[in-house]
Image (cartoon, rainbow, N blue to C red; front, side, top):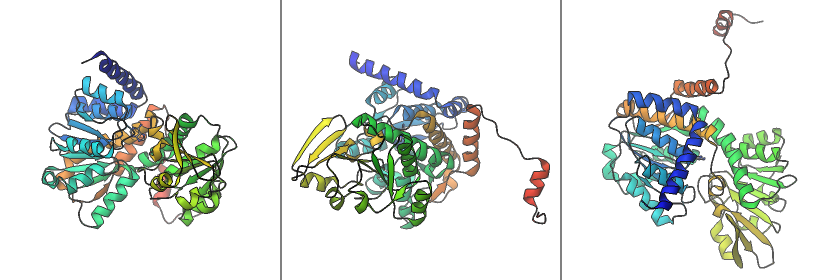
Amino acid sequence: MNKMSMELADQGQRRMAWAEQSMPVVRDIQERFAKEKPLEGMKVAACLHVTAETGVLMKTLKAGGAEVRLCASNPLSTQDDVVASLQQHDGIPVFARRGVDRDEYYKHIRATLEHEPHLTMDDGADLVQLLHTERRDLLPGIVGGTEETTTGVIRLHSMAYEDVLAYPVIAVNDAQTKHLFDNRYGTGQSTIDGILRATNRLLSGQVFVVCGYGWCGRGVAKRAAGMGARVVVSEVDPIRGLEAVMDGFQVMPMREAAHMGDIFCTVTGNKHVLRMEHFARMKSGAMVCNAGHFNVEIDLETLEEQAVERRTVRDSLDEFRWEDGRLLYVLGEGRLVNLAAAEGHPADVMDMSFANQALSAEYMWKEGKQLEPKVYAVPEDMDQKVAAMKLQSMGMQLDVLTPEQETYLRSWSMGT
Ligand code: ADE
């Protein structure tokens, strides 16, 4: 091992230890796993953003007795020091490198499957998709899977609907202790972090357009408003649109918002939310970024074709010049800006997401063989337990109902 790679591995180890300090729930699970070894004999293929927090999760699964392999769920989200540390200090095979092209990205997913896993742990369902197309020979050995994100869960539901999903998968994203915190506060903070690192611009007073008002959009809008931006929301769903209005934001179609915005952030999970008709209306200096899972939300192909010049201004910031002289800026190549230009969600929220992942892996190893090939919710008691553990770690205590209140809640005969 050369000195540089050792230094990189040591840096990754220090960053993982720092993240672990803010992951008390995962730490607790790791301690129990180390004693009980509930994952003994299980081979895991994980396809996640390779961050310090993911490193802590991988070590937790290994402590539980699992044989783990990891690859990246996005070409631009990998933290190379974490890769080096997991490989060199923890003996976990990792197939990932920041900035890989599409071919290498899929090559890494294929390599992760080579140890013939029993469990898939996915973020976006690229691993599951590859398994169901190229590596169907491995399907009989799979006991179950877990899925981290909204986009992945939507893909899995469409596989189940078309009757092609071959094994049970737990939708970790749908746990309350996941999306209410990770998607909202995690994406909220880390997206602003990515925008600031890429641009070093002042948000105060800027018109900040949030495209999509799901849990991630709500978080981004709230944090942008907190920084003093004037937030505009575009939505297609009337209930979400109404919620955005009542949360204090202006709601309008993107065609109208296009000429007003200083910063645009897509968080819809859909394709071409920002496209030529919008670029054509944007003012010079407008900045566009994406915090949705895939890099499809901004039509970058058309942008590249139509612009007369492109140059990289600083890390994670590309400038496009139109024929009429207007300038448009794209952050993080249109990939998840919070991971491409910053470090992803803070460990404090990944603690809950990854506690659900670790407990779901344990549940699948115990129960997976009895389950139908469908998409499953995280068991309610598991979700509650993660919340209770997190609250306890924060030194917060809940109140309890009196016997009189319990009786009242059960009775239908008592009114006023
Ligand atoms: N997704 C968003 N932030 C993340 C993080 N810090 N680690 C892993 N996956 C993430």
